Image (cartoon, rainbow, N blue to C red; front, side, top):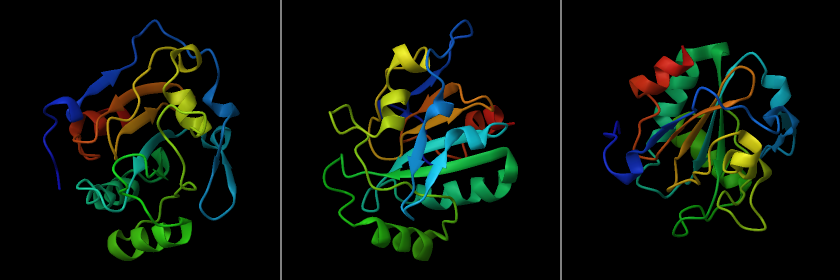
Length: 179
């Protein structure tokens, strides 16, 4: 399902060189679908790809690409999926059924967060609040355009880039930034 990065959903935004986060992402925790908490501080030294996901989306095949990237990059990269029902009711399941769907259909072994809201509302997941607030992350206000929007953090937890849903997780620009 490698899609071309054309149009609005193929948007790519990169951190301007002179910007710094005002609030460290390492203060955040991800509530995993397993019920455990994953501190972003525990991922220091690795790149982190945060992706909002949905099981009934036209981009759902990107789970396979994310899994391949997860296997290829090993300890260099941590991928975390954030299931969300924010776009056209495309994630109706509960945490257990979402995890089972991803594992059975795509062999997903990277962690999935608890299903949450990724768009700006009073209920927005705190990780996505940080990702979309330039007064916190230092530069980016881009909310997810759709399911499978991707945010890449560097080894120090700084937001490096935003990639729209039409950008394949295996796109050379993503792989180059991961290193």
